[in-house]
Amino acid sequence: MLTGSRARIRELFKKYGTTAVGTYLTVHATTFTCCYVAVESKLDVRGLLTRIGLLDVPTNDSNAEEKENTRWYESVIQGKGSSLALAFLCSKALIPVKVPVAVGLTPVVHRNLVRLGVVKAH
Picture 1 (cartoon, rainbow, N blue to C red):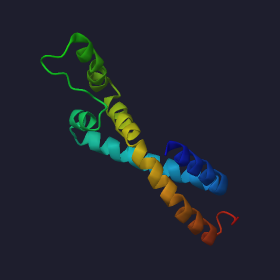
Picture 2: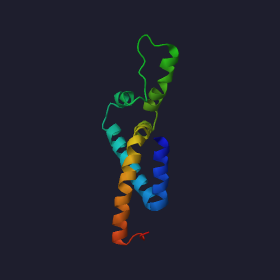
Picture 3: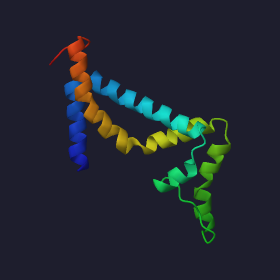
Picture 4: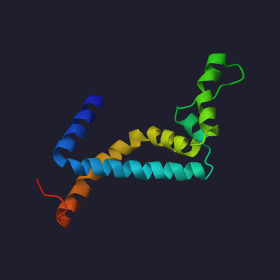
């Protein structure tokens, strides 16, 4: 499955070039902005990261190593750029969503750009 996905993405970049890159970057910027707004709106980021598997919350019977593995989250929260860092983590976690969205939108965007005369048709 992964090999087929990679082949499809390569084909997409060969066929649409800069339109594919621009579409992905637009999807990425939109996702990052939404994540930042969510973090600034006091979204329960710890709960979200736990649900999607990026953070394992240690239980009372957890060993010291498991507790140490979650300290990165606490250091990010207390740092100066904590909102940006958390938005970045959330945005990275959404890559499995962003890539298919960009792949699906690229032909539509390209078709509209050709119609508007911004890019040349193949």
